[in-house]
Amino acid sequence: MRSTVLASEGLRDSRSRAPKVPMAGALKARKQPRQRRSRALVAAIIEGAARVFDREGFAATTNRIASEAGVSIGSLYQYFPNKESLLLALAERHLEQGQRQLEAAVARAREAEEVEALFRCFVEAIVDAHRRHPRMHQVLEEVSPRTPELIARARELKRIMQRELAAQLRRLRPELDQVERKAALLTSAIPAAIHDDIGERRDAAMVDELVALCIRYLGEP
Image (tube, rainbow, N blue to C red; front, side, top):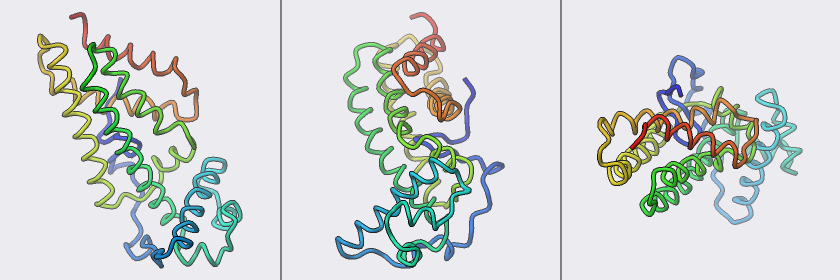
């Protein structure tokens, strides 16, 4: 399994691959939703963008996104000046969802009684994070703007997973050496393997295969 510089729930910090980030003003929402109705409108636009990017990739137009969301193009532009700002909103949503799933995975991992169950907690969480809109996640991976705040949040999720994985490996496999190094490699390799298969099957067989790979990497107890 290959490693990546950053792969938490969906974003990698790979500066050689990352596109140039537009100026901050070009990414910033033009208007912040204050009332429940406007917040619902923004949520509809973001979800519409996810569906259209999932079908059409980054070639999708803002007109198609507005139509999918059931809003006028003028309403869309009140909140999002361009496609990049929509991708940034999607990336932020993805990280928020990923954080919730990681927190749940950590709670389950602390109750795991064997290594297989431990790995299954994290693999299932990451697979679930990418189950909906798989092509949209590929667009995020390839062309989403990388702001310093977004990169910092993604790195923190990676640190949490690595720290918890190392702690539970010590608990379940106290004889293991170089636990931190192994946990670091697995923390990068598991999301990378899922990203490599983006758009393919995301079922129990895929989870089983990844869990088996992780166990083989550790070797026999």
